[in-house]
Amino acid sequence: MLSKKMETAINNQINAELYSAYFYLNMSAYCEEKSLPGFANWLNLQAQEEYAHAMKFYNYLHDRDGKVILDQIDKPKSGFKNILDVFEQVLEHEKKVTAMINNLYTLAVKENDYPSQVMLQWFIGEQVEEEKTAKEIVDQLKWVGDKSTALFMLDQKFGRRLDQAAEETSE
Image (tube, rainbow, N blue to C red; front, side):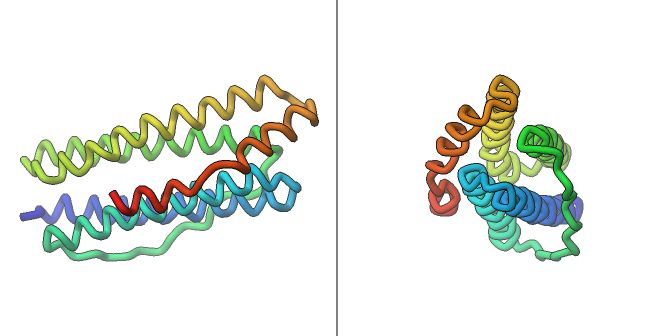
């Protein structure tokens, strides 16, 4: 049985994952406005992936006879300086999400909640990948600087990102 503490923490994580989707969708809109459709595509797919993460937690709560309580989603920050600023914020956000997942895992250990520990292992691995990808993009954008041809090529590269959210929901 899921403890009340764990249920509350997972509900908070659902909210955080939905905020993440909103956060990335807002950044995608910024990229569209700046005529960076490839980055917009990447961020839009990231938003879908975050929604899929929220649904994993949502379904997990139901599987464990928990009660889902949806809360208000905060408005994401806007007014980015440039595309590098966008992805530096992506990296910081992913680090914050990693800390949240780690805290959830710590709670699951304290609560002797083995099913939650197993479920959270997937998210721990996912966060390693999320941080790695965000850091690589930040590094590439720093390397490119304001060279428009190189930025155009990166934009094209990120426009080819496939929809991974659909794959995740089926896992």
